[in-house]
Length: 74
Length: 159
Image (tube, each protein chain N blue to C red):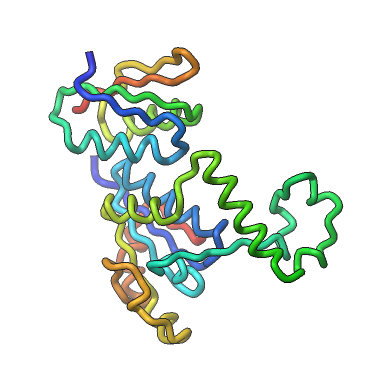
């Protein structure tokens, strides 16, 4: 299960990514961050974010009208 | 993986032109880019502590207007006194209702993400601007200083 939660609901690009980056900065390697977002653009954004920063996007799904992401800090 | 570099030249000082430099810079920084923004001419307005950026439909045929006004509202009407303020506040309200970050917030996030901000000394002198009105953390330099970074950049944007 996730070590930390970040609720980015209602926030639009680029805020979900920026908040995630800030939160990840304060986390140790190997820890998992669970992000909830409502911005549909965030799906592709987080894919690109992980590809670019080397963090692992372990899960990306839509549930209950919101987008859920699990990122493992590398 | 070597860090990529993004250089932006910000030359405009209206609300609609103020967003791209900060959004691009803060997103790039989040993605691990080393980013620098060079503010010149009207872009210097983006560095003021108290941002009061305006937007006007006058001369902006691409700007969407509510109630289908862009279809029938005469261009001359957009020059009426008060129109600019009305349009600016409507735009700001729209942005807030859609969860778009304010410019101040984006700028703060950019600075937090260590985006370097450089103000064009020449333009500051030209317009006799009071630098005490600018935010902290701004470097004052000329074009040559900007090229030091821009010349190495992977992406260079003129906004």
